[in-house]
Image 1: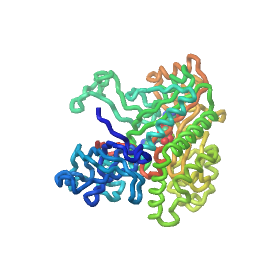
Image 2: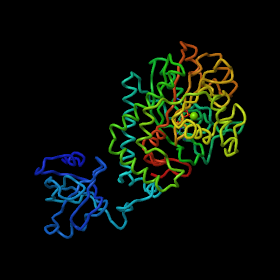
Image 3: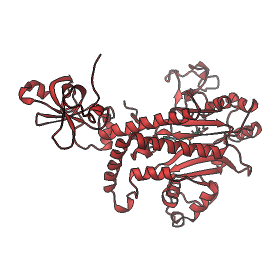
Image 4: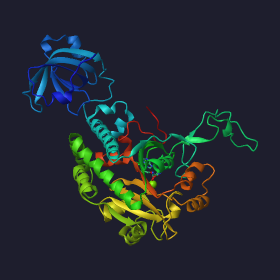
Length: 478
Ligand code: 4AD
Ligand code: MG
């Protein structure tokens, strides 16, 4: 058994004079005497004071940035500036050397772009320590939120034969030899010879399976990885991202909106209270970054102000039709500054439009509802007007779409008609249709993109910096 104490605990300890043992990685070593040691338990380092006159030169040379060491010594009150406690070392043991010439993380500020290239080491920086602690806290809070409300956590399959969104942007899963594909008589790939006996892909959403479970448990949620092979090279898109998808029986769009808003406020509040130190650090990081920008591009809010604002205000709710009216009359539309001008009802909203609504017009999170049926998925419930569906998107400042959801079409005849219109093969989704045959009930749900939430709460600007090893076009390193 290895016994050690956490630096997080020692930094707030007043047990001066006690013998302690810590293990961690050297951040810096100054004057052959002062080690700043970090063990990941918190962002802060503990100062270790080495009695260099009585320490072998050979050992001192091996205390380099990045090295893993074990330190035994006495916890003492620090006289130096910047820390309350330090360790007077009696023994330093090198656990793992780190060649200082080769170690890519120097004790200086590195750009986020550079750190992305060394994502295997970037956890060792304060920024990424903070980001991933917040990510952890948000994940935990999500489970707590649903657990407290009696939801059942479902693990929906990662490999599926269906395309939940009907979007057709999927990664194929196959064990067929790509150099020698078996063909059917009419020259098509013979998936009957494939591992599952049919064409399969990585899931784009757990929703359809989630709906099946909701029709028995009443309320469920999923929280798992989803995959999209869309060629989007943006700061908001990943090819592999995590999604939270609650699904609730006996619920309508109104209930769905309320659940989403309550959940977001709950988890943001959780992060603010449980990651105060990390968020304060990220707040300052963002403020420094903002200072580099021209005045008119700077945000009016700090990160913490933005999070509190979100907690203390109701999300703005309006219909797609109302949003189109606002956009039509907006300055950038009148002055033809939008890349895609809004001139008629039915247009799909681009991110420039979403950003205008949340960042310029309402200046707060916005829930848009009742979209034209033609720009939404087959499973969304048809409204009485026959033109719109009971859909909702939640748009966030600086992020754009954070949540997409809807009340589901529970009426078998209407669902079948929509599937026909949209060329969704009914034979493949026989099990989905069964829920509408046997005890169908009104139900609703949504999907929250977890990385977009982490992006918002950490104030980071690129989604590739809030997931450990991002997957995006032409990149699957680590
Ligand atoms: O709007 P989407 O495509 O909705 C669905 O998948 C539904 N089946 C959800 C449901 O009703 N259960 O995706 C949901 C959310 C988006 O609002 C966005 O936050 C996130 O997932 N998202 C992505 N995040 C990162 N990278 C991508 N490529 C994303 N695509 C969607
Ligand atoms: Mg969407």
